[in-house]
Image (cartoon, rainbow, N blue to C red; front, top):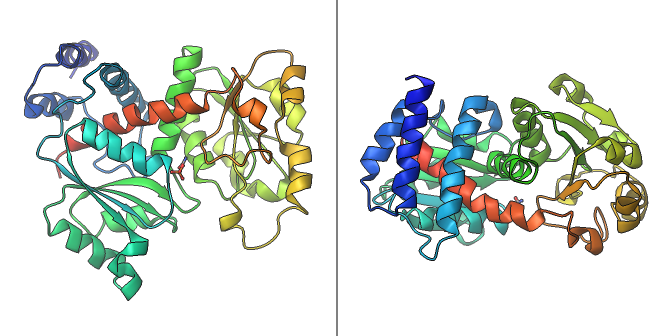
Length: 341
Ligand code: CP
């Protein structure tokens, strides 16, 4: 399919959504089967190529238009059943996926490990196969272990979307982060993004680095030596241990939470010392030569990695990120639904 044909398909799809037509999902899926994603599952950004990311962004642009209308629902995933299975706590990702699925008219079932038969010793594969026996088409899964989504995709028939697997990847977070930068700055290519904090334990950091590099951004990581993995240079990112130097370099600062729940040993003397060296406050922000954009994937620990006046400042796009998460997840689910086994 040529670029012109792809553009034509996208335009027709855009028109259908904008007119709020009750169009046949099979027609749109047929279009995207021809110009679709290169992967059947979304297990990590490493499964996507730059064209996949552009397609997700253009599809999300259209869904964002839908979300800003009085009637926010389209019939795109009518007759598709999606199970959200969360083995780890979540506020944003779980609600965002559920809203995205409902806006697309999918049938949705939710599963929280804490209140399930997992606590009676059932394995992950048995749990998911039991859910799939109830005719579920897609599984959105968050799990504390890295690689859980990859493992599942090899053992069950449903399409798997990784909603965060341990310290490995959080692909939809990276997509919504890059989409928010594109929305704010016009494009991602050529922009300088610093990711600050606990890079070692962060799935958001790894997925962001892979996504931003695909899109042509320059990426730097900043934090204490103990929280920066040794292999990080091989991903093509700069490393800076001085926060002020990093902030003066960047256009965008993505401030990460310290992942205390994944830290088995002490990586720095105290949270107070961490905040003194790596916390972003208004005084630092105002001292910079330019107005940088401040991001945070959430949940925020106010007063640790970021102060309230920065989180709530005009330079912060934290709530835009959350808003964009629904459109991005709609796009991902819609495009994956068009993939064949
Ligand atoms: N950003 C993010 O993954 O937040 P939740 O843990 O609340 O889903």
